[in-house]
Length: 231
Image 1 (cartoon, rainbow, N blue to C red):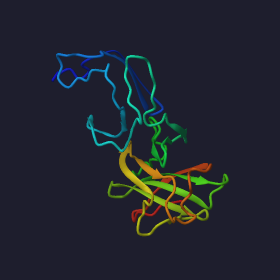
Image 2: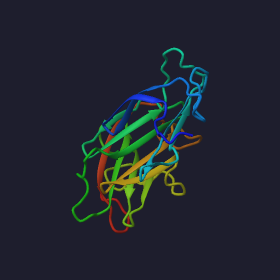
Image 3: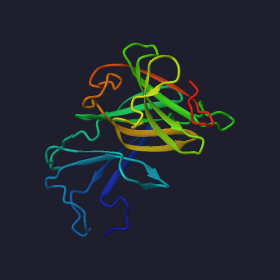
Image 4: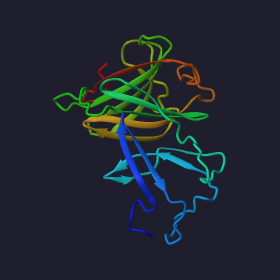
């Protein structure tokens, strides 16, 4: 096993834009002297993943996908990994999403350098987005990424029937329809990623079917010492 972390790679170029890292490189087809270096002239399935870093170390992925066919790199080809993300920037934070057949992977996180919704007192914060059939708050499916007074971060799934405090879609499952949840705090602002089922069997009308089209509403604010949102 080589001690070179980029063994077999050359012409490496990297960039970081809108919160997304991009890398390009040339890979040697095979290196017989290096253990566990796969011969890329053979055919393989391609596995892809997205996940967090902690202290520079890769942690368990929060989203993964595999190709449905095998590929060889004798000729040029392109296969989608987790789909090239769609995103929307909302000044203090951004929302990105990666679509797959029955679910969508979302990332809601601060924009680069943002401290806009961090109060000088250090009060906890939330960032949220909702799906709406119009461009006004009310009758919306809402996701809240919430930084609590104790420093923990939770993800909640609400239904907002007006302009005031929303109610959980499920009182027994505060993040109903969500899985693979990871949370973080960046510059004092919460960040959440999760996989959302597009639909739920026997779900009520408050759980929106995201196979349909919606406006995206966004909001950010503070949280009381008891953990309640200030709307």
